[in-house]
Structures are given as C-alpha cells and as structure tokens.
Length: 181
Image (tube, rainbow, N blue to C red; front, side, top):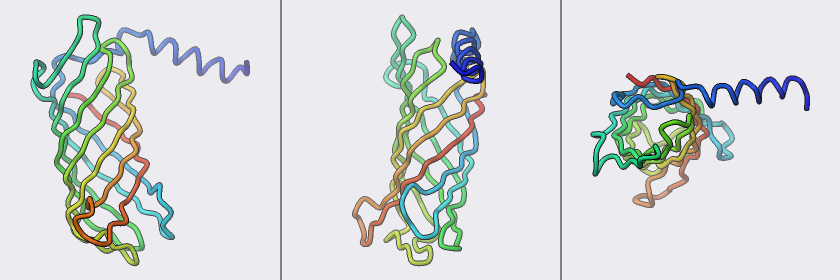
C-alpha cells in the first residue's frame, strides 16, 4: 500500500474510534453554509450558495426514535436563504422544510434526507425557465461529524413537481459545513 494512502487510512481509523465522534444529546440547533454546482448539462452551469438553520425536534417519540445500541432516527425542521445563479443571472432562493437523519450515536457518519418547499425570486435564468417561482427541493446526503462540526455532501433535485410547464428541474452536487450549538 502506498505510504500516503496508509497515512490516510490510519488517520481515518483513529478519528473513527475517537470518543469525540458522538452526537451531543443537548445539540438542538445547528447552522451552516453550503455551496452547490449543477449536475445537469446546462450550457452555463448553475451555482447555489446559502446559509441554513436547523432545529432538531424534541429528542423523544414521535420526533426521535433511538435504540439501546445507539441507532437513531431524528426529525428536524430546516430553513435556508441564499443565491441561485446561472446563465449570467442571479436570484434569491429560500426554503423551509423537513429533514430526517439516520445514524448511530457512536459513529461519525449520518444520512440526511428531506424535502423543502422552495421559493425563487425569479423563475427564468437566461434560456432556462423553471416554470414558476415555487419549487420543491428533495435531497439525500452523507455527513461526517466531529464534536460540534459536520461536513458533508448531498445530491439535491429542485423542480416544480409538474405544477407548471416547463419543468426542467435542477440537480446539484452540494457540499456544506454545519456547526451544532
């Protein structure tokens, strides 16, 4: 094995078994920033940058389910505000929706999935017409948490759910960083 790869594997193993890789039970609020770029083939790629806030719903059923072994499912409310740009034009993008995370309390990775009604200040960006300013954003992603910081990747799809024509949709690769208060 290449020595650089050995170091990466060693550091990953040490960090994975570190006691700091646990979710703080008192963490209810989170905030962060994320940036995405289009995964679809438009002539001029789209970019989305936003700030977001997350509220974990109460840490008991029906909002959270946990096993004695540390596995959990947590429901959350998430809102965001930012800018969507493409085709040499920029507009506001904002959303408010629901998210569910799946994970294991003593393991640093968790899966996040959700859906959010989304508002665009403009529905036309050059030659791309999203059909209407009201959209829906669905996503799934994987996040790595260390102490109070998470970094992650998500794939997201935004469209108007065929409520208007045209409905080209927009797929984005999104990376983000979150601070858990």
